[in-house]
Length: 241
Image (cartoon, rainbow, N blue to C red; front, side, top):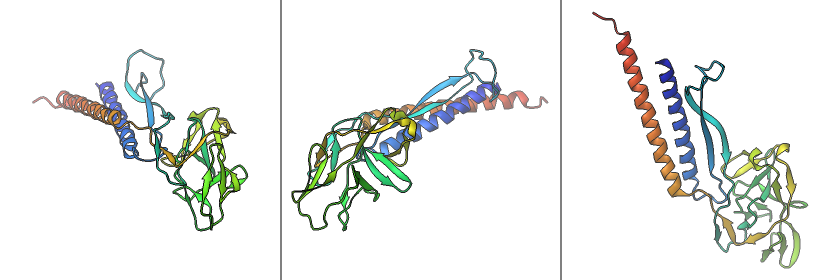
C-alpha cells in the first residue's frame, strides 16, 4: 500500500515538472534564439529511497536527465541593421557576461551611444579581437556573410563565433544564454552571418500545448490514485466498533 502511495506521489512530482517545463517553453515561443528545454523520465525500483538490488517492480518515476533541444529555429527577416542570424545550426555568438563569456543564438543586438554592440541584457558582442564597436557617428554599418563588420566602408572587426564538441554540457544562464565548462570543448568556428535576420524560437506551440495537456492528465491521474490509496489506508486503520 505504501509503495503505491510512493509511486503515485512520485508521479505527481514528474507530472508537475513536465507542466512547468512545457509552460516555460511556451512562454518563450516568441523569444529570438530560444531553445526548448526537455527532460527524460524513467521508472525505478528503489524502495522508499533505500538502495536495494533491482526487483523488477516499478516503485515510482523520476527525472533521469534534463536537456536543451538545439535544433535551429526559423529565420525571420527584419531588415534591422543589428539583427544578426547564424545559418550554421551549431554556431553561437560570444558575449561578455558578468562572470566571463556566455553564448547565445539570440542575434538581436543594438548599438550604444558609445558605439558598442550589445545584447538586450547589455552584454558586449565579442569580435575576434575583443568587444565589437563602431564609431558613434557611423551612418552605415554592414555585416558581411563572413561576419566581418565595416562602418562607412572602414573595417572595424569580425564577429566571433564558436561551436562545441559536446553542446549537451552547456548550462543555461538565462532564457537564451549559456555558459560552457571546459569539457564542452568550445572552439572558434567561423560561419555564415546574416544581417537583417534573426532566428526565432524552436518551440512548436501546437506540440507544446499537447504536451501541456498530457502532463495535466498525468497529474490528475496520479492525484486520483494517491487520493484513492489514502482513503483506503484510512478505512483499513479505522478502529472497528
